[in-house]
Image (cartoon, rainbow, N blue to C red):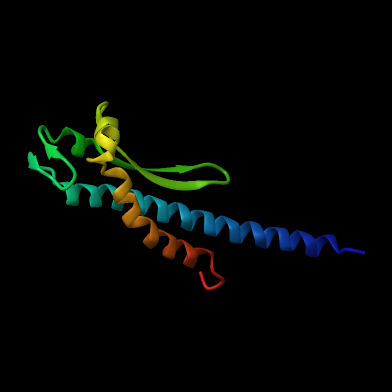
Length: 124
């Protein structure tokens, strides 16, 4: 015969562990969203002129780029996006010749995953 009080203790412990890991994951996502924005701006540059990915004519595209987090009751994530209406053309035109979002995220994902593994390890 199962012991309901022990079962409830196990449920409470699992909720506490999940809650701490969720909060740690959310904090990690917020950090990487900010890091993605910084990495993009550092590699492209904020000044007008030639950047790593495209030529800054007005600097509006790079200044409007932003990192973001998404979170609901079960999912947490981060991303990077361009804030100008024409940013999609910078990313997709000419077979992605001037794309900046995906290469920036691809640089950061391995580091993010390494840190995320620590959050979900028994030692984390």
